Length: 291
Image 1: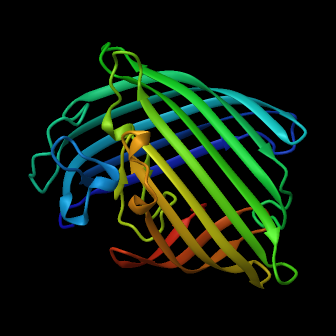
Image 2: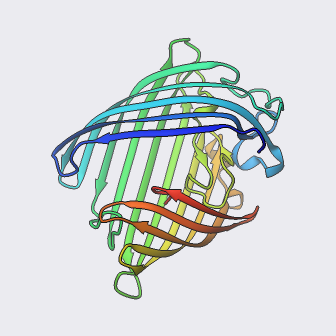
């Protein structure tokens, strides 16, 4: 989009991966003068929107998290503190956003804490051949204005199994995330979970689906083609929703296609994929994990 300015930076520190006690911090900063917004009056969000419902808004957002955790075999448990400073306004396109978006045209500073549990029984780092992983979080954040805040819960599971030949793996993933108002405090819309090309629904435009809830499933068939290269074919499906009663199989959006993963000795460096969806065909490069 003409005139768009984007800045994104991320700094992360985590303790030694084999230490029984760990801690760390992560900071995200985003400044975008014309970022996507898909919504209808009401507002209607998530699965109810179409590509033609696109408008825009400007966003400046600084998020941070600091945590400490304890590792007990395959289980890790940790506590974290979090802060979220977001400000939105009209984008360069000049469209008025749908009425009813909580927190629009305001600066909202939130702070809170949460709990994270993670179970990992899938050895092999970024190239697991068998096993399973499960993680969950509970978090609450509130603003000092007495008007805004939310409680968030999330679950994610992954399973890996060899299939057809040595080194070839079927990888399955499922995730669920839900934001709720914190008592009388309303959750700002910029904190809603997202499903898009970078978030569990490959092939869809940036911020394509955004609502208080998001559910997604993925399947990948992976096979090594070189020392540090893997090829894969994927199928993603998901739905963003405002209420659990909206979840219906015929409302889920899906994408599929081939891709390549580029790895170092112990981490995923980059992936590339060509995705086919009901809305368009899209090629993308991604740093870090998408699955």
